Length: 353
Image 1 (tube, rainbow, N blue to C red):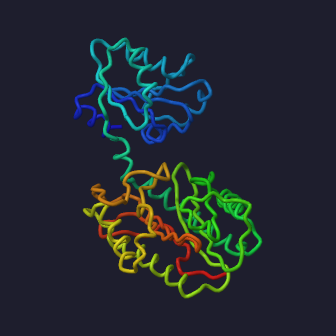
Image 2: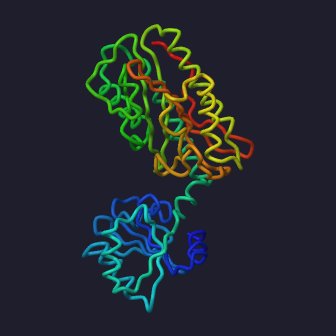
Image 3: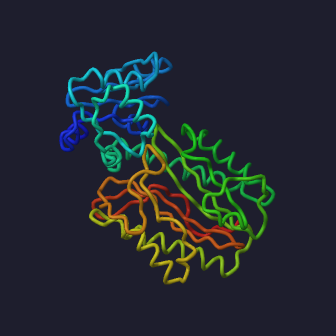
C-alpha cells in the first residue's frame, strides 16, 4: 500500500476510499464479495460484514478489519464523520455509484470533500510483480492444456453448450478455481458474433467454431481464443485465417516498453487493412489481464497508455463476416525488456477436424 499512500499526498487528499473489490484484493488480500477499504497516511481499515469474520483472519494483510453490523456505508460514514474538520477523500468515479457517494456524504455530515483518484489502483495493478506473473503463467498453462484435451471432443453433433460445459469442467479438473468468464462456443454463422453465448445449437460439418476460454488460478485470469473448422475448409476461409494470424503476429511484434497501446492496435489493424479485411474487425486488439479478465491498458485506436515491462496483455484480432462466420485468435503475452513473450501455448495453426 506504500505506492497508494504516496499517491494520496500527491493529489492533496487525506485518504482514499477503495470500493472496487479487485482493487481491495490487490491491496490487502481480501477476496470476499462485500467490502470497502479506507487508506490514509498511516492506517488502513477494511470494512466488511459478519460473513467474512473468519475469512479475513486468513486473508487480510496490512489493514485492520472492522466487521459492520449495520451495513458498510453506515460504518464508513461514521468513520469519515469521526475525522476533524474537512476530510479530503479520494475515490473512483468508475466504481462508486451516485447513490453510494450521496449516502456517504450525508452520513459524514458534510465533512467530506471528494477527490477523483483517476484510477490510481488500476494503474498500479497494470504492472505485475513476480508472484502475479507466476500465477498468470500457470493460469495460461492450464487453459492451453484444456484446449488440447477438449480438441478430441469437438465434432459434428456436439452442442455448443455441451462443449462449453466440458471446457469449464476440464478447467477445474486441471486445478483452476473456475473459468475467468462464461466460456464462449459459437459455431457456423453465430461465430460472427464476437461475444456469442453458447446455445443448444449442434456443431455441423463445414462450419467455423470459435472457442474463447479462460481459467482463474489463485485469483488471476487467463484468456485465450482459438478458431477451428469442422471438415475441409475452403480457400477463402483459409486465407481469412492466415490474415488474422498475421495480424496477431504484427500486434505482438509491436509490443515493447515505450510503445503505446494504440501502436499495437494500429499494427493489427493495418495488417488486416492490407488484406482488405479491416472493416470486418469490429473491436479493439486486446486488453490488460490480471485479477480481472479486462484490466488496463486497453489496446484500442488512439490509446496513449505507455506499455511497461511486466504488463500482461491479450492480443486478439478477429474478422466477422455475416453469413460465413468469425475467426479470432487470442493469446496472453507479457511485456518484457525487449518485446513480449507468449504465455498461452495452445496450437495456433489452422485446425481442420
